[in-house]
Image (cartoon, rainbow, N blue to C red; front, side, top):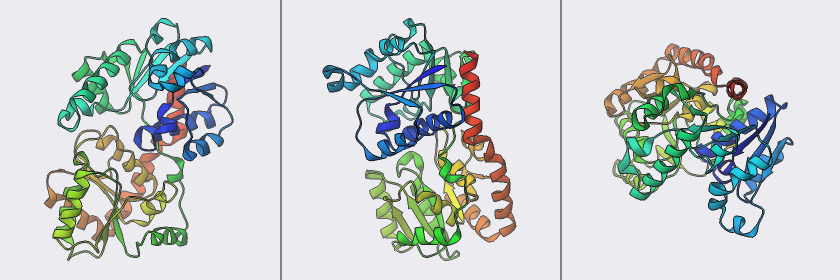
Length: 376
């Protein structure tokens, strides 16, 4: 098959949606070389994107050709890509993040769109009015014209049905993976050397993710503050943010926790696995996620996980993760103490969690995707 992707985020985004795009494309490139892959993207010059592309020799990059398309890449993606996909005689076009090009339904190409979440409808207060209108227009069009809508979890499938009236029979749940850098153990000496380069010399609890209201980082810091005299671990927060991050930093300062709660905004992707593997516990008390990739990164890293009850979290964390009410800092404090002091519990969480997360190995997720393509 000749399969095309709206791959803008693979080359221009280096967080969640970009990681999803790169991991999906890389998995197909490695495990299903019988197909041809075409990546539609505006011009790019980021060294990270160039390095990623250089690792694969069976990917065809399609960029805007004429001056106007290069000058206005958003217009090219929306209004010209469909015709270029038809000219290439693609069998399938897959929009990797909520969008499909206008007119794609008239080309005879089978279409798939991935919907990660509907956070802008669940939490409209966190999004600007204009952004919500744009998101809604794009997602409604994509889900209406696509032959198959991929939901990255059962929770997103339910939201598509309840918020947009998307027919259930049109939706397939296809789980995502994480980067394979998290699959393999790192020698202890390298773990230690890596985290020490960032000034971490003690045992620690880890959080990875944006520092923003929906991620509920403040509750984690408050729960840790209640525990500071009873545990020897520091709290390491890997992520960045804006106004909310300043609020978290202000609270840390007010409690005199500057030497025990460390916020790192410069950890590279290559160094991140060492943080997971070196930590004794991963805490992720988010209110809502499209999927929660950091959870499976931690499970692949053989690190016990505490996350939130409900929503998508049990799908990502499995039966041996501990789930707490994200609004209850006392419950979170108690479970942190429980895992750090009960070594048998922690060992069971690690071993069973690693067995569970194998279902998200990129070999399996790539096969699930190809099976879907074949069904079309």
